[in-house]
Image (cartoon, rainbow, N blue to C red):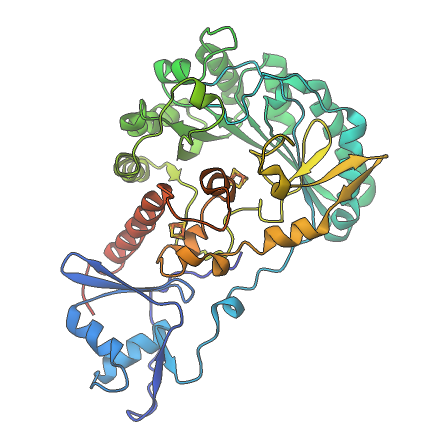
Length: 459
Ligand code: SF4
Ligand code: SF4
């Protein structure tokens, strides 16, 4: 991903001669915001607020009479450039395929919870990954890891990974051993529901670098949305894990799912997580209506209501020293594809299928035709490279409906798995109710940046 800091201080003036001809940046957006306009160049990392006269001057940059100061300012931000200087967006963002040094294993489909909205209907099947499958999968990326001197092993999946703790421990040992003998720097991460024994909590705290806890907040919300398999409370079990982690000073990231039922409590949940004492980063996403969610009649909040509550909660989070994220953004880090599912992820299911998406792990999912691109067979990983190439083509430049969207380099066409589910075509981003959220989150970041920078002054 190309990082472009959003420009704050303009560089020195570059106007050479008033007769020079200028062109506007190729990717420039004019957004009406109240009585003024925001001019936004996501690839140049520039944003300014102007009045309508300045906007007119910019649009007629070669025929009007823009002042020298204005020209200098626009030049230094990259909003305009000397004629012929503008590069195509594709060449500004250079996202080469990376060496594969990262692998995610799904240790099991079993689960000790029965979350009301589980996309994978976790726990409805009972398949564990074998140690042999894990070793074959890891061995497949070892050459790249040796070359790059790093490996990242993650545990995730359509069930609760810690339900297959023997595998997690054994595979972690294996990776440590191989890393030591090959001069590789290993790191480990897990995404878990936090319901496991104290012994496992201690082991995870001591052996896994990054832990993401899926949890929905205070007791009533958590127990309603994420009960134990037998319908009982999961809250106290998680609190036991949190207390062990606290004792060992182990930090947690939190991933929280927002339903129509809990949407007006995001702020309350932020405070709840802060009070746990070991959480600083939270990602909140509206539930996507699929999987068990449909049987349980769990509803997603309306985009407007989610956006309002999310933005309010984000300001609150900042005020109490917490970070609240959503999957779009942040500003200043333009991207051309939404996530690693677009030909970069290497995820292995318990049955030994290779998928690029966390949510698509079974062959009976119609989307598997695109996202499941390999399998372990005859002791080796067999990859369909054509499928990877096709996934990598799903960049924002190839999404017709996204071309005029100012959020295009923050959102990059949104989650292809959800879009495929909605429209049966990952290239068709129409009818996506998340667009309203995606744009709203980016717009809010733009306003915040302008406010912080200049107190809202106009150019
Ligand atoms: S495609 Fe969507 S569901 Fe799949 S990994 Fe990416 S963000 Fe997650
Ligand atoms: S917000 Fe919607 S239109 Fe804009 S880039 Fe994302 S998917 Fe495309």
